[in-house]
Length: 182
Image (cartoon, rainbow, N blue to C red; front, side):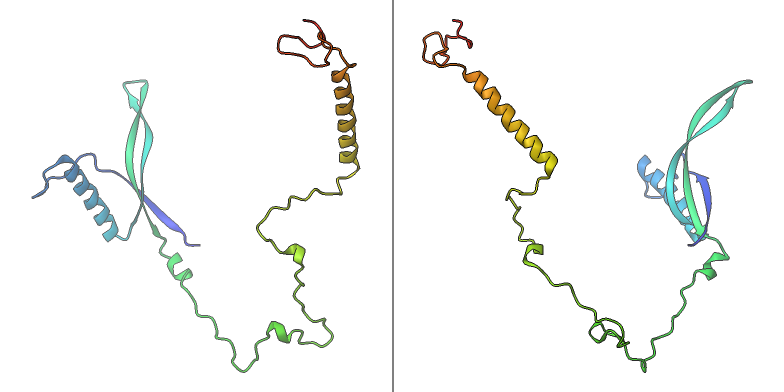
């Protein structure tokens, strides 16, 4: 991994006048462009601009925090460039035959490689399986049975004896309250 050295310089605070550059934005862009080109000519790569806090003295005992814009540049260290040069690898020997999976194993004592057989159940047809599972396990089976018996008991309590409604038909009408109270 290459190692870098970094250089941080203050970003230009105001633009630079030049012939044909009229607006303040264009003058400021020209000042930044000049700094970037100058650093690039010295071998520095522009990395980023940062806005960083700076604590500075104010008066005899006070301090204030000012925010400073800086430009960050980097370049590879001088000695590391040679250490990370690409090196050539040797070409494979054309006289040695390549081992292919179908010719495996080379040693007759080793077992032959076989691709796993595809089963119809392993293939995905893109449709979600909606069949109910028959193997729920004992805990879920007991829970389902308990829920069924509890639901059946609750329904039996709700029905009550025949003719329990105020009008004796066993149903609660729109103006009747449950439990036979009108």
